[in-house]
Amino acid sequence: MKDSNFLKEHNARQFWHPMAHPADSMANPPTILTGGEGVYITDVDGHRSIDAVGGLWNVNLGYSCQPVKDAIAGQLDALPYYSTFRGTSNDKAIELAYLLAEFFGPDGMTRSFFTSGGSDSIEIALKLARQYHRIRGEGTRTKFISLDKGYHGTHFGGASVNGNAKFRNAYEPLMAGCYHIPGPYLYRNPFGADDPAELAQLSAGMLDREIAFQGTNTVAAFIMEPVQGAGGVIPPHPSFMPMVRDICDKHGVLLIADEVITAFGRTGSETGSRHWGVQPDLMCTAKAITNGYFPFGSVMIAGHVAAVFEDDDSGVGSVDSGYTYSGHPVGAAAAVAAVKETMRIKPWENARARGPELKVGLEALAARYDHIGDVRGEGLMCAIELVSDRRKKTPVGKALPLVFQKAAYEDGVMIRVSGNNAIFSPPLVIDAGHVQKILSAVETGLKAMAEAA
Ligand SMILES: Cc1ncc(COP(=O)(O)O)c(C=O)c1O
Image 1 (spheres, rainbow, N blue to C red):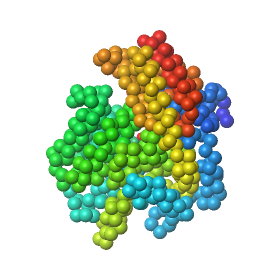
Image 2 (cartoon, rainbow, N blue to C red):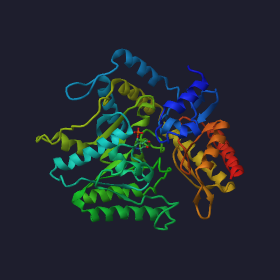
Image 3 (cartoon, helix red, strand yellow):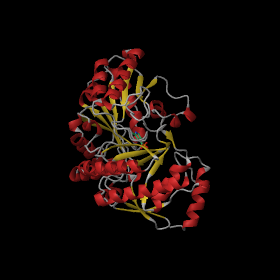
Image 4 (cartoon, helix red, strand yellow):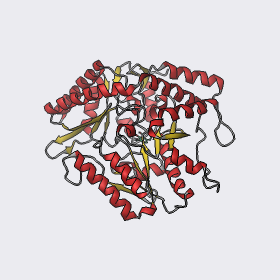
C-alpha cells in the first residue's frame, strides 16, 4: 500500500468524488479507508470505528461475510465474465433469478432483470413501465409521478423523478413528463399537518389529484421509496403506501417501489413494501443484494406485469435495454451467497430489535440537546435533523454538521451527514453494545457542535 501522505495528496489531486465539489477534496480531505472487519472500518492512519453508515446503506451483513467473499473468489476462477444479452446466459445468474423469485415471492414478484446498481435499476423500471402500457395499447401513458424528497439515483430518468433540487439543478433540462407531489414528511410539510395519519391522507390525496389533473391515460407509473432514505429517512404513516396502491389501481397506474435501500431487511421486514403490506408492480433493488461487495442490482417484476410482456406476440415486448454487466456472473455469485446468507440470518429481526434502541436513544439525546430538531426512523434506518433554532426549525449551516461528524468519528463511530441530517444505516448485524457506542459518539458530536456554535 502507498503511504498515508501519498494517498492523501493524490486523492486531492487526481480523484473526483461523487456528490462532492472537486475543489473540496483539497479543503476537506476525505477519510481514506483501508480495512473492514465485522461492523468496523479502519482508515489509513489505523483509526478504527463502528460503521454507522453501513458502507452506503448496503453492507447489511458487515465486512466479514465469508460466504460472499468465497463466492466472488470462486466465480473469478470459474467464469469471470460473460454477457447475458440475448443468446447467452450463465449458471449463477439463473440460480439468482430462481432464488430472488423465492425471496420476493410474497411481494408478488416472479421475474428478475439484472442491472449494475441502483440507478440502473431505476432506469430499467421506468422503461418497463412505459413499455408495459405500450404493449397493452396504452402508449399515451408516459408520465411519471414521484414524491418530494425522493431519491432515485442519478441517471437522467432517476434524476427526473428525483425530488431533491440538489441532484437536479445542474443537469437540467431533465426528462419531460415527470411531476412531484408533497410526501409524508411531517416535520416540514406544506399542509401544516401535525398528525402523520392526516398527512398520509393529504399526501395520497395529492397523488389522486395529480393523476386526474395530468389525465389518467397519460400517467405510466408512480415511484416511491417505502421509507425515503437519502432525503433524510422519512418513514410514512403505515396507511400511506396502501392508500397509494389503491389510488394507482383506481387509475391503472403502475406502482414502482424503489427498494434499493429497503429490500433485504433494513426496515425491520424483508422488504419495505412487505413492511407496509403492499405488493407493488415493479421493485428496484441493488445495494445489499451483494452485501455491497460487488456492483449489482435487479428489477423485480410482478407476475401480472411479466405476463403482459411474455404474452406479447407483436414484438413490442422485446426489452431492448440492459447493460454489459447485467447478470455479471461474479456479481450474480455474490448475490446468490448474500441472499442465501440473508435468508439464513434473517437480519430484519435484528433490525427490528436494534432500530428502536437507536431511535429511543436518539430521542433521549434530543431531550437534552437543542440542536436536534427531529428524530426519525424505521428499523435500522434513522436520522436526526440538526437545527440552530428548534422553535423555528432553522437548519444548521454547512459547517456544524461537519464538526459533529468529525467529533463522532474521532470518538470511534462513522456517521453520515447529508445537508442538515445525520443519517444512521449501520450493518443489520450490530449488537446492543454497538448501538450504545453509536449513541455515545452522537453525544460527543453534539457537544462539539454546541461548543463550536
Ligand atoms: C432509494 C435509492 N434509489 C436509487 C439509488 C441509486 O443507487 P446507486 O447509487 O447504486 O446507483 C439509491 C442510492 O443510494 C437509493 O438510495
